[in-house]
Image 1 (tube, rainbow, N blue to C red):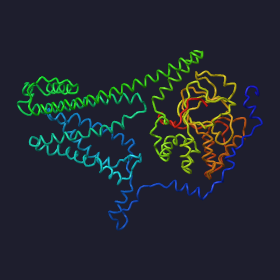
Image 2 (image 1 turned 90 degrees about the horizontal axis):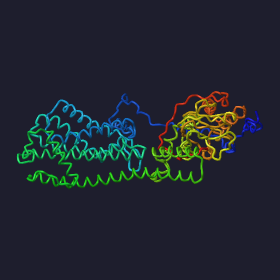
Image 3 (image 1 turned 180 degrees about the vertical axis):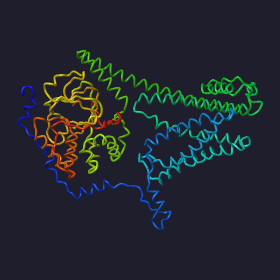
Image 4 (image 1 turned 120 degrees about the horizontal axis):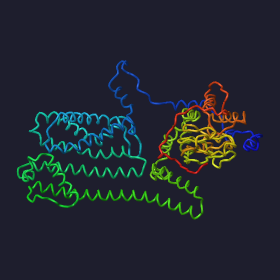
Amino acid sequence: YQSADPTRNLMDNFEFEVLPGWQDAQPPVKAAFAGAAKMNRLTVGPMPDLSDVEGESRWSQLAAWCLREGISPASRKRMMWDILTAFFVLWDLVTIPTQFLELPHSTFDTLMNWLVAIFWTSDIFATLATGVVLPDGTVVLALPQIARCYGRSWMLPDVALSLSAWGDIFVGASHGVRFLPFFRVVRMLRLARLARLQVVLNSLMDTNSVMLNLVISFVKSICGIILLVHIIACIWIGIGRLDEVSWVFREELFDAGSSMQYSIAFHWSLTQFTGAYADPWSKKTRLERLFATFSLLFGFLMASCFVSNITSLMTQISIVANHQSHQLKVLSRYLQAHNISKRLSERLQRNVQHALRIQAGGTPEHEIKVLKLVTEPLMKELHFELYAPVLKVHPLFRWMADEDPSSLRSICHTAITEIIVFEADVIFCPGEVSSSPCMLFVLSGVQQYIQSADDSDILDLDGTMPGTEVRPGEWLCEHFLWTKWIYQGMLLAKTQSRFLAVTARRFQDILCNTKSKLPTYATQFVAALNSDMESTSDLGSSVDSEGMVSKLCGGGVRRPSFLRQRRTAITSIAMPPSSEHTTSVVPM
């Protein structure tokens, strides 16, 4: 037995001790700790019902309304509303110019006119209830401030355009012929929402992939040009129908139908964007000449911008592809120059290719230079939102979120790194002393933890490997936070995996000098280790952690079963690949 497992030989006459930082930590001050917890739980709840209060005035109702908050601009509800906004903006961009074709009115057109008017009226109230992101990154959720910001920007144009939609339904229906020119102009003014479409599409189509973002930008440019050609073609038809000397009558196309007129006008509009002044009609009215000149100038400018944008996008796509190809070629030459075996070379190249795909799927935080301009408190908020949901699968961190949130924010901000490993990578081995001790939370992938030294020689990944399977939502090596630890088993990646690592030294630097109950938890943890040295494991146990945390809260005493490797199922926590705080691909 001793020769089979040398790690156990080291542990025979060894006893774990609590790290000096936890021994020297100051005892908690109950009153101050309770006060902090009480203040942490102080939240703004719903306003009390004042309907039964005698003498209630409208001022009290107004004050209650002012204390309410709007919905977050990044919420799922707002995203769904933005999708509807994009649909109705595109509907207006396509259908409003077709009024010049004088197509027959149908029941479907009437229904859509009502839906458009109802939606844009509702959008005013939805905008008043949605938070506003200020230039400094602050999100304003107070309803009075939202109304103030909206009133200074798009409120008046939105109200005017909504009224025009309702006027189109009621006044236009009863006095259609009389007010037709006026309502055609008013409808065209509703195309000003094109500026809003750009904002909505940017928020909906923003992805973590650099290549996908470039492709989306390319498609948006193409669609934008087609929409502009469509609008100019419809206006050109309207000009051609003004009098009998216009191009529609001159070319005897009035009775040819709207489809023929639209195809000829679309072709004419498209030539304005190519810079080729191809015009089969030599005689024009003054209005036709002016509009043709304006269209040619506008089309030339837009085509120049379009070509420049497309060229830039294609160049960026080429740069991204060539950069990855160059990196792979450099690696291949390096491996050949040093006579690395073919089997290892193939593994290294597959590993690098996979890492490049992951990098293309999301930009690491350290490569986003503008984040260096963000204030320290705001970066704390960012890291807390990224990492706290993962840490809170552990009962201790869940307890800290309620009792000491400021310390948990500091941990998320300074003590977190992310580790990426690949299939068949060995994360740690039995008897190994880590140079950078960390507690690990599994974010994705499947690993195999092998406790026995005899089993560690089995590296077959066909599913018959002995040991314990580790999945997302579980944690390992919590021991580094409380004592000097030596790895007791081997952790092998069965699939490509990601870990969230809590650096032990930074964790201790943050919490050892605070007035908390963590020294009590550390003492319990180490005592549980020393109670059964033969069953020590690197795996974590939610059952044991819950028992020790319950003692901190004054709950009943539960005998730790930490050493029996019993773990409850924890819901998997998924993090977006773009949220790397510090990323490493080197096994610990």
